[in-house]
Length: 114
Image 1 (cartoon, rainbow, N blue to C red):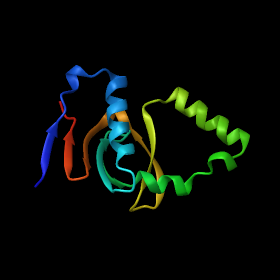
Image 2 (image 1 turned 45 degrees about the vertical axis):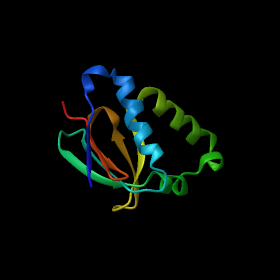
Image 3 (image 1 turned 135 degrees about the horizontal axis):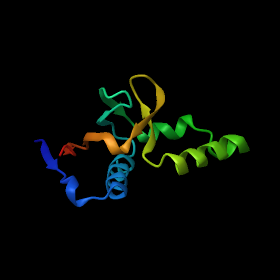
Image 4 (image 1 turned 90 degrees about the vertical axis):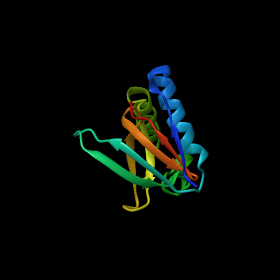
């Protein structure tokens, strides 16, 4: 059975929506997630991701100091972007949390469309 959860965006601030979507993605652990969002060029995109796989593709403490600084600068300047692992392209991609319209995870669909 599929559960449809409509999330009313009018009650969320931008920061709250980002935190809610990020929490959904991070709570899925090794499960696969389908996320739909609008790309920077205005086109809609659907992507299958697995956040646990992301950890296998980042250097963490082994990264150079300049790489660590670049990551922190990006987080500060672009808090709307979240790194995800695209399981079809086998690449790390960025998702704009502000443009997410649908998240399908663990048998539930969360619809963020107004």
